[in-house]
Length: 318
Image 1 (cartoon, rainbow, N blue to C red):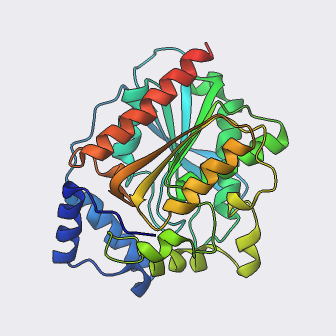
Image 2 (image 1 turned 60 degrees about the horizontal axis):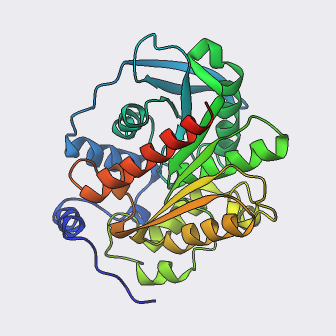
Image 3 (image 1 turned 180 degrees about the vertical axis):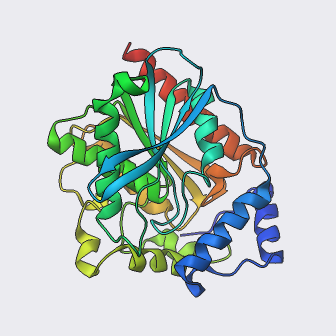
């Protein structure tokens, strides 16, 4: 597999990272990684997009209360479609604050309620804790639509990286249980397999931003309990035997990303199973680019693609 050139704007990000005090993820402890990630987000200094209303609260989960944040495009606008969103971070780092800008942009861009979920993180809470929280959040939102101003018949799931993994897994779990109905799954460079040995793992192993091949294996080893978990579809949805009957999917991959090949493979598996799939490979982008608005034009376009897909899906369900 031949390495593709990164976009000039992405090269500037890579150069800035190399000139900073950033340390490779796999050389740090989880606590250090979280602090480093928070500093990176703060350093971007993104001006938060205005939304109609924001509310922090907790909802019940299998392991206790799950913090969530509701973003509403307008105050007292009646029932709106909802997107249950799971942040990225390798199942180890990230939270609703690190992905606040993304949630705001999707809320205003798609005109829907966004429910950002602060699921349990590893290694304090290993697999399947995050997957259990993801399903609990989707179920709760569907069951309490009237209370939270969401049309329970128009719910989508989405997320980036580890969050894309949880969105895919939640969609599978919901299908298996027969409810709730999911209208769309938005999977942004999702983790779908844990072999960590695809072609893109070797081509983009290092030098393409913060996520290196060794770092992804570090995340895996902190998240999973043992090697047998790598074969469990609740951790690696590409391992699911049957992908039929799932909600339509928008799958975005970053061209220069260790996770590229497994994201593309999951889109293909979904398509082969008869699922309606829109697959977009974002040329010259690296892992994590989706959160880099407004400085990366490709991120602005990718978020616009997601908003457009959500609006089309929700409009068709009216």
